[in-house]
Image 1 (cartoon, rainbow, N blue to C red):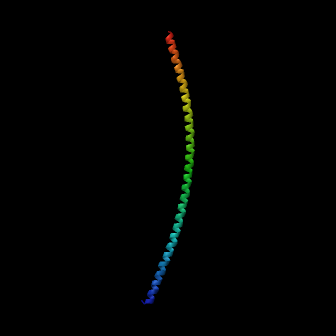
Image 2: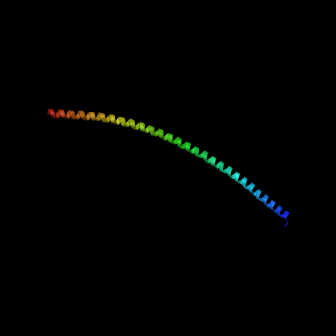
Image 3: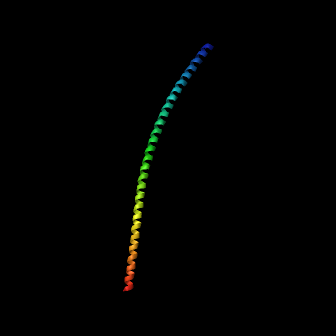
Length: 103
């Protein structure tokens, strides 16, 4: 094999390697774009889910606030009823005491 033939062979191999590298770069670019599209789609879906969860949490928090207000109202009514009952018991005890003192 002559030097020119060897150079031609080296040039041919080098061109083949360069072509393979070009194809690999194109494939990597395609994979990169596809991966970025998937990441963006997942990010969008994740944001949507977070927004839905946040909305649901707001709804639940509102419901809890309503229940807390209702509980406060009921507790206040029970306290008022308890005060009235205490006053009635005190009046009965006083009346019984007066009856015992007379009798």
